[in-house]
Length: 319
Ligand SMILES: [Zn+2]
Ligand SMILES: [Zn+2]
Image 1: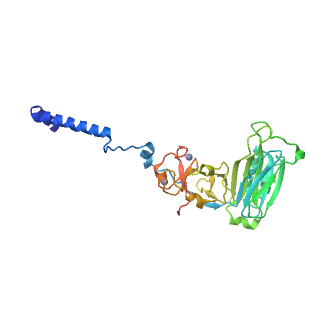
Image 2: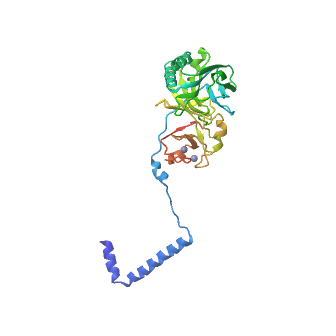
Image 3: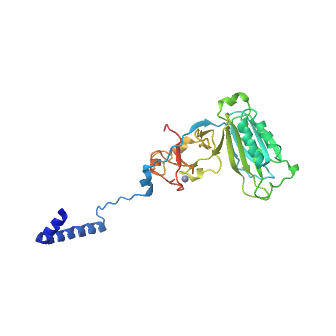
């Protein structure tokens, strides 16, 4: 009502025409200033910031000590020439390599290890395999240094491949167990099973670790997975990271995550978002480790691969 009254009043007053001219001048001046760039501010928001009111949930984790580290040595691997394994154990341990294991018998073996993860774990695993493998080979690991061991099928077996695709056999399954009973209670992890692909005449895909499982003394099984560093792409690893300790979720116990050995070096790297704080957050499920604790609160998608962030966890809570 007030607006209508004022307009009506102006229609009968010269002041109305003066006001219209003045307003036109103001609008034109503002547009000209804007075009030539004088102090015209704009606030742009992207969808991540708008959604930042919903921070991703923190996954509850627990640190455990894994005495086993096993990876493929950087040497050629094949059925004919065998596979060089590179490993380090914090205690004297037994490594048993099973060649050409039936997939279903390996599943039985994993279940058996869950039921008896202690000193008899290796025996249980082997019994569950029920000789559904071509060859087995034992190694004693007696020191805590890095060891490189060659495991291979005996030439007299004349095995050149593991059958047509899809495969019914895993080329190589490496089982690590603690060698002494009295140290078992010192470790959360007491056994490790690594399933390895080895190229053969029918499938030339290069050798790689397919799965790696860890077993606790209470019989829980966790899959060991690598963390991917974004700050230095050369550090990204396809296999499990060199690690002597891991993160474990007591909530659903689904997975274990490795951490790099050289944390001190890594912690100096900057968050890829703010470039000003240490990387300390692991994004799930992509496992990119690239942002700090502050920036993760403002993200819905991983800044490296754009995957939706379902959860995150803190690597170190004290830095
Ligand atoms: Zn940051
Ligand atoms: Zn990612």
